Image 1 (cartoon, rainbow, N blue to C red):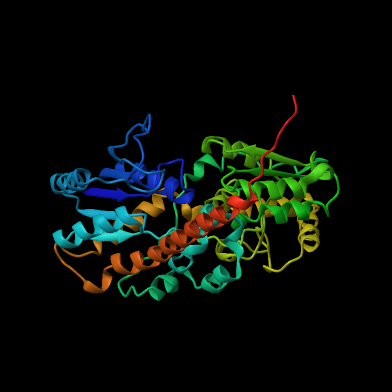
Image 2: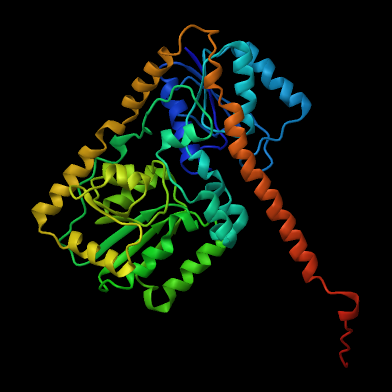
Length: 417
């Protein structure tokens, strides 16, 4: 089978979408002929045994395809030459919509994997553009309601088939280590995620202030939102400086070693469709304590850690940390064993089997189902974000112009020699 996989990001950019799309293409290429298309550059190396071709597209940044007329036509010539049996897009943005148009004309089955809730594209994407404005009342009104992922996709007008297939992980990378020694004096709490208000690391720092000195917080992630990172640094202050450890962005191959030293993985994240970090923590045998969100609700209960209400105060979260980290040894090891069992079905092998079964249900090539057209509904959701981005940029320009000195306010400064 020939499969075209589309992403908006390179492997190391774009969080879960970039990683999952790349790993999915690699794993699927061990069984099929796969082309991975995204804005960016070709990786320096590809895993052995993969029949994977990377088709890079020139980009404005690491997300937006910069297509000239010639490049636009070159994509269609390539598609006509490659003749994929299936197109599988991991992005609702321009590139995904363009390829879907080609697939509709050619009668090629088209699948879309949602890495964001369409109704919340504004809240997910605008953090990097709106910084402190990302939590304004306007945005809250637009994004205040959560629905389960399938229902959320229905809410944008899609009436076709929906297949519930979990993210895949290479679980063997995480389940080879023994759980951290809960009997040692120092207790390591960890969270993995780039620095965004949505990830809510500041809450974890505030929570740490309510714990004894032997508790340390390990924050693994990239400083994407520098303003938010400064807020976190201010919350750390001199009092917690020795107890909060920042690793910066780590190559993903180094994450298992960090999880192996972690006694409890903690999350205050406000929204996660299906967090890879939670899957990886559980796969490593690390209990998870988190505020309720989409992934925590799905995977975490008292057998593998603890789930707390979204409005839990930091001091109450801290009490829950102590109750888990101060369990007797047998109870703690039981949570670790149950954590690994909880995510055993998330291995890539299961994901690929489910995906191949989904492809097989598409019917003969050339069959079309007008109800399953995602392009218009997804572009409508994405268009909301683009419009708000443009409005925000205009406001920024107006704000900058307002700060420029007016003629009557300009004063000469004379310095004596």
